[in-house]
Image (tube, rainbow, N blue to C red; front, side, top):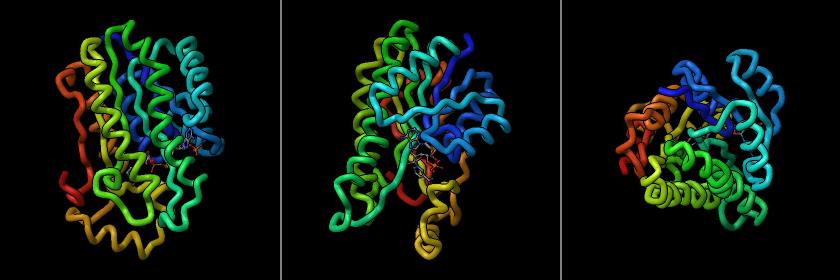
Length: 241
Ligand SMILES: NC(=O)c1ccc[n+]([C@@H]2O[C@H](COP(=O)([O-])OP(=O)(O)OC[C@H]3O[C@@H](n4cnc5c(N)ncnc54)[C@H](OP(=O)(O)O)[C@@H]3O)[C@@H](O)[C@H]2O)c1
């Protein structure tokens, strides 16, 4: 198997970091993207030896430029893990237009931006693996997250359309929908709210980034070619979809 280059957006922390580490272990060339937390990115590269690159996934031009630079430094990437994401929670009544747009741009438009930039390389190589990170909240809905739920549900629909368009070029597109995983994003949830959420998880705990990473790696494999357009839920049984 040729050595593949994989881009993991939001790869320097949390779930993305878990994915990067597993891909490196599996002998991929990996590039992790991040938004601006320089300290976390420097620590990530020091501890893992994996390259970190800063660009804003919600910015279309920045994504095109980043992909071009990564291609010349590391070779054409044919595996993209669209993992970068943010929350800007609040009920509809209180949610500003800015918080709606920020989440849609960062969590959904980013998937368009990165996939669009990489698509020609995947077609040229007659191989591509697009793995989009959605969320249980995109499947089940969540109070106070109309922006996040809309974006994450959008990712699932987009993945199914991509799967149809990519099939003839050996490009698969799949979604991984995690439940609550122990990362900085979840650390921002108030403890009393989190306790109530964990009480609804049959497995009775938060997930670990490695548990998400293993599914992503499985989908990226060459011999996973018949799996496309699917959604893998990894949520400790919280929502069975
Ligand atoms: N944690 C969970 O329980 C959970 C559950 C379901 C789904 N998810 C989804 O899983 C993904 C990862 O979540 P996480 O909890 O690991 O997140 P996290 O710990 O908050 O890390 C987010 C990563 O995304 C990067 N990022 C954010 N905005 C960006 C932008 N505009 N451009 C480029 N990079 C950007 C961050 O860069 P900086 O470090 O520079 O800020 C960071 O590397 C997200 O899509 C999230 O919605 C998470």
